[in-house]
Length: 140
Image (cartoon, rainbow, N blue to C red):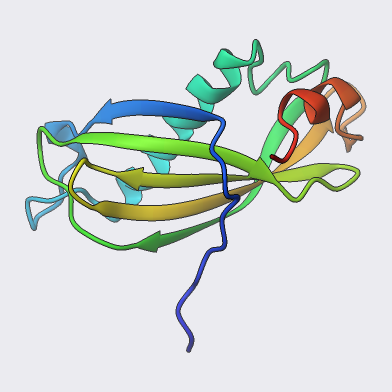
């Protein structure tokens, strides 16, 4: 089976810095693969907050993560400061992709992509990405 290869936007819109905590380590004493998903969730929350949004109110709609892909590159260890650069691309009528480059000052730790779908919980259905969101997070 072929490995995942992620293609990223050429420009990042936001950078988060998150330290590797002791609770993020696995039995190999390095950053656990499942914790990377938690770290990108935190980075995504910071990203949305930077633009005045939350996952429950993103331009008047909610967002749901439809899928995720993570390409692991190197180990990270307790005390490392992770630099998460975030960019957005591939808008459709009801979704967009968020890309994450996770690194330290020395190396890339992982690349990730989450597909985000806009959703209305009152109607319990997928809805269009608000124009305001597209304009703020527009592909560069």
